[in-house]
Length: 335
Ligand code: ADE
Ligand code: ZN
Image: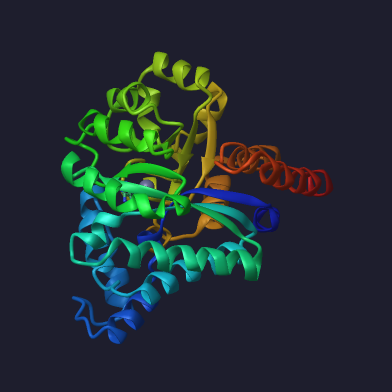
């Protein structure tokens, strides 16, 4: 089964580039930039990665990101993630980045976007991995602050496909960002949002009805409301589920209790993703492997999950069909 997963062509639709920052690269970049980090060894960093909730994790995640200063740093971070994609048969990835995490400490928007997008171009050239970018607003900040980020992004619009909403969910409902999402859509960005990770079903409703999202990041708590589940199905919105993130942040107690199978049985379109792989114990293939074991998923289900990852990507129809055809051949030859 693990071999089937490793070779399965797939896409990753929920990945924070800052969350892919491995301790070893963090040390290397900290040294290069002469920045003190509050950890003495890779082991100390790994020991600190024990979280009891989303906020616990976010405090450490933002600390790590402080090390990133130059275009080269953002390039190295992104290229390192894309190398891992190639090794895992991830054909396509939709990468979230949090500009405010960097611009709020004086790094220019262009430094961030140029480093990330140059790495994406190089990875396409060197490994054939395609990618697109999702600019995520930090929901613990004000809507005015997000408007500033939207303005800064305009000269780089051709490099950005979608806007997202992440960070501390509780107390920061989607409705707080109604205007900036409306303006973002006017600029041509596709709206997505984290919803129903720690927040309740009413936050998912708001993300649907007010932000008009085209995909739901996490969405676990949608299951609280049967009407909402029906609405998500009616609108044909996929959920970007992140199993190891869910257990690391104690959204789900144990993988064996993960609602993924229930979601599929209800007719929800689920995809498997790593969220913040450097912090949560595994890349996307590890997420597939562990959830497969915990829920005893069949090859057919794994194929369906990979199929959803391409179908619900924001790729153009031609590229999407190319990947879907490759997946189909793989499945027919290996089922
Ligand atoms: N930022 C990075 N990972 C996140 C997550 N799982 N939820 C909310 N914001 C995040
Ligand atoms: Zn996330």
